[in-house]
Amino acid sequence: SKTRHFKWEVEYMYWSPDCVEGVVLGINGQFPGPTIRARAGDIVNVELKNKLTTEGVVIHWHGIRQQGTPWADGTASISQCVINPGETFVYRFKVERAGTYFYHGHYGMQRSAGLYGSLIVDVAKGEKEPFHYDGEFDILLSDWWHESVHEQELGLSSKPFRWIGEPQTLLMNGRGQYNCSLAAHYSNSSSSQCMFRGNEQCAPQILRVIPNKIYRLRVTSSTSLASLNLQISNHKMVLVEADGNYLQPFAVDDMDIYSGESYSVLFTTDQNPSNNYWVSVSVRGRKPNTTQALTMLNYHNTTSASKPPPSPPPVAPLWNNYTHSKLFTKKVLALMGNPNPPPTTHHRRIILLNTQNYIDGYTKWAINNISLVLPATPYLGSIKYNLNNAFDHKTPPANFPSNYDVMKQAQNPNSTYGSGVYMLSFNTTVDIILQNANALAVNTSEIHPWHLHGHDFWVLGYGEGKFSNENDEKSFNLKNPPYRNTAVVFPFGWTALRFVANNPGVWAFHCHIEPHLHMGMGVVFAEGVRRLGKIPNEVLTCGLTGKMFLNNKND
Ligand code: C2O
Ligand code: CU
Image (cartoon, rainbow, N blue to C red; front, side, top):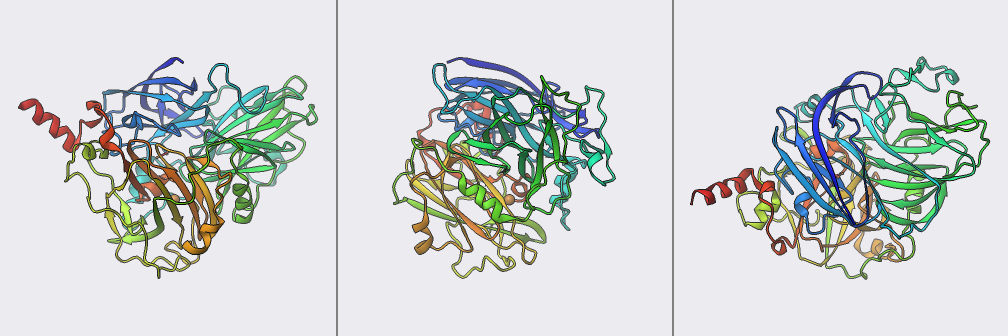
């Protein structure tokens, strides 16, 4: 194994992700940030310089478990103090496992501002994947707004609340088209045909293939809000990997991907090589107001990339066809030989009710009536050093009142802000039930993709309505549940997860929709913190831990 060194500078820059100029958070002048490519077992060493003039920054390595390096998880207020303007911080961690991952900002809404990139881990030298392919493409999906993230953030925390609305554009590898369409000539829409001179920042990345080969497409979603559906016209896709774990292969015509998820799909270039084909990405689960993102699959030795495909882009499944989405999600199962969940007896079950409610007239998301507010001192330090005033020491509730009606409009007059932590006994098996409910508006319940830091969990099952201990537990899949780091909870439904609390550290578990997290939709788990050796001082230079160091020096 090797150490892979990267030297990065984060700064705001002008960019035209969708042919409209705006401001993005870039790394080394690039948007999206540079791709990290490593092999399983390597050490990744990123020296990150914050060149923003008035904001802190951190970067989270989504899907990397950070065994033994919880301080490198890159979560502001949880694993570290933010890196101040002008300062440099070194992230150093091991990438143990091959797979498709990404990285992104984890402070305020910096991910929405464009701070993200791909992180791909190949199998170790001499190892083999359980499938064969001839070529590879990586597609990082995101959504883009024309309103600045600062304004979005202000709207979300204002009274009355101002929602950010639907994204202006969907981006593939940071490229999309707002004021023109690649498929304008097929439709009666008012949009004009895109004309590219060749080096526009918004020009689509064409996937150039040769006939009769198998390609691996690695797809990750770093969207701020949108749930997506991807298809390649005329080509079947075979799913083989999710969040760094191999799947029981299955073929589909279109696939869903939620924010925080990653997949590898294989497709075979067995179609007429004198045509081009659409690769399209559309919104699911919210009434779309964003046109589909498009690029082309081009059989490049036989067809010019400028030849339009013979037919219009594929039509996405209806945005609210949840039956279609559930069918897809339930097909995602682990490949035999993956680690299985420990047997039925969990040591602890935590039921997390997801509600939207008002707190003093502000619109918030809450978990068991508590809307997460992050403290000034990172938990990793305050738990390690027993700093009692750093956060709420009352354990947050592990359930909600049994008479709560999840199908009715949210009525939570007692919701509060909180910063409490679920302290998990080291090495115990924890079951989590994510319980969805009706939001503030009548007959509405949203999709929430929940992401766990520091672990993968087994997704034991999905169900409708309120979870019942007696009945629903029997339906758990303990044979081949998918092992992943992100799982969706469908509207008015529940999702059951299991993980082993065996990674010393403090870990966020939250909805990966950035505005939802910003509105309090998350919880914090801590386990085995006392087992950790020394925590590097650099991550604890703020809040009460910062003061502690200062006092020690004066002694
Ligand atoms: Cu990709 Cu805590 O997030
Ligand atoms: Cu959410």
